[in-house]
Length: 516
Image (tube, rainbow, N blue to C red; front, side, top):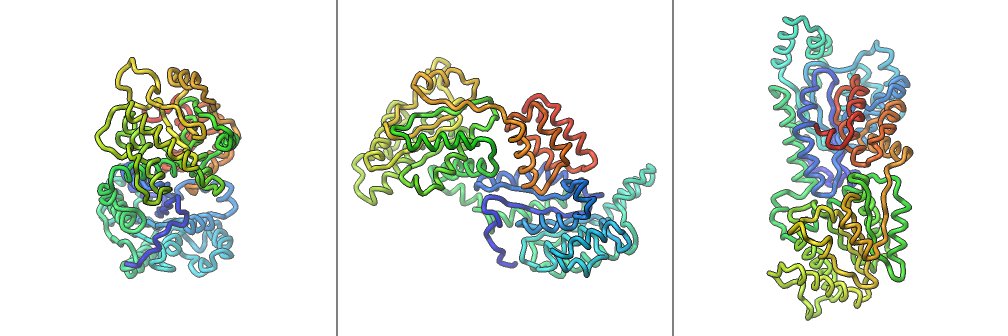
């Protein structure tokens, strides 16, 4: 096994390139998308990394295809990827030295990839295998697998009995020559097995193939790129919570559009004398968390604010994170940790926040106030963010809204968020003189930028007419609705049905309807 480079090309994103011919491999791709991609997403999200499945089944626009840029686009997406997963059935894919359109694609790719001129008889899928692995075995983590001929033969036999010529076409070699080229590719892959994550020459069926691919990916992620889940379990409670809240923040700063003026407003408030507490509100799914996280990211990355001691708590992102006692305890402990760092080992005569056993809300509020005062006395500016107040668990229906949130010292910064529908919380915070940022729906230009950039991150591109269809739907004014629609399109596997898929998604009237 080669000692693969352990750093991602983009530290915040894991890009895995999935390569196969289009026809006859739909079942593997659907199995991967529906069963295994959520697991990969979970592994990545728990470490603040975004998972992008690069899948060229669609995303090459009619314009790119007409200008013969298919090979260029595929190989460029591979250059951006961190892993290569290749799989074949019996079809070899688009190839032919006499195919004028394909040879024009070769012509256009030779300037960036001179080696393609020597393999003009190969299929586009084999070009991906060559560039992703065979040209430099071991440079990119790769898992390569080929489906058992017996599976395809059975499908073809059943299709012939039904007179289904399309199915026979998808599960048969294009020609004897194509079958020979595919067999040659298998042998070359097998010869380099020691420099891969694995090579399987005859997995039995699509479910087994998808499982093998996932196992190879999972093993690589836990061994080389991520911290094993076993180690996570062994971390202490405070460190694990800090890791999960940090991962939540990291996942919200990948792509953000349309709120720069709000970020500027929050930055100016940190500099104000004195700062005021802020409430960020708006409809569910409008981007409140994204705004808060991107402001925090900018604040923490700016050396001019090194005097700020930042603690962020995202209600619901970790176990027990919605309990009032858990929120107060965790925020207090993190601030106390910063005090201890500043004191550089001096005796801690005010160590109330470290005492175990107290679950009394009033006592926890007092401890938080004490540690906030200590930080300001040490010349630091506490910055506390609590995102999702409406999701905090109440002990009773009669409980007064946010009674547990103490008054902060004069120089401390407090920013909270809640849904527009949480009227009791909003009324109470306004009574306490919180300044309010009320997020509006996404405007059309912002929707368009989000749509194009999100798909581009996944190596996809819609036609202008398709983009218009997405952004002109009233429901995509909601950031969460837009995100779910785009995620569904990225994982959709049938290019010719893409317009119908877009229509079905934008016809949904709510986020809930998208999951029905």
